[in-house]
Image 1 (cartoon, one colour):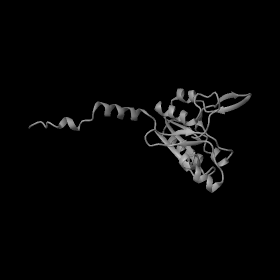
Image 2 (tube, rainbow, N blue to C red; image 1 turned 120 degrees about the vertical axis):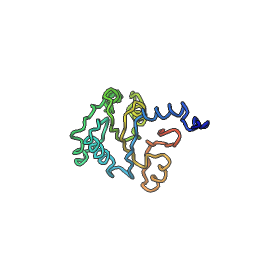
Image 3 (cartoon, one colour; image 1 turned 90 degrees about the vertical axis):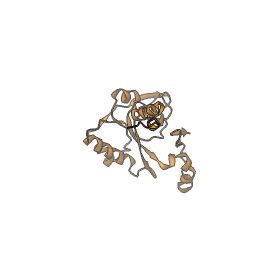
Image 4 (spheres, rainbow, N blue to C red; image 1 turned 135 degrees about the vertical axis):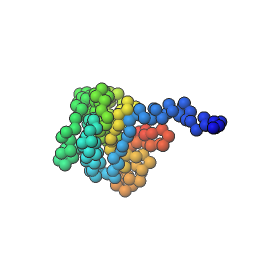
Length: 182
């Protein structure tokens, strides 16, 4: 049997293998996208996280804002909640996600609500999406939420309809991932 001289052409290059290995090490991101506040993004994120927990996935809550909604709060029991970090800003204590605690805990899945959130001054990253990027780079999967008006390219359209303009936006690009502007 003769060897095919072109058999090496079908093998992936070393660079392609390294890129594939890098993708497998990175966490995966799932965004629960909604049309407006109060439509059930956080509720659905928590319901999905509870299903993952029932499957045996190690899930922690990095930060979730229930906004006092009883039905949303009812989905928290059974999920480990990482205590928030207290940041002193001009004498005001602001509670933010404790990124270092989530990284140290190393869950399979972290819940990080409100992707477009601006972190308190003094936090490691100015924007929450950068916290999420760090979690993903550490190999931690992330579930997050985002309102459509926070997508920069849709901000003007939503503002014309609602007469409300949000300042916290995320600019998306297929090649570079999310970035934010203020």
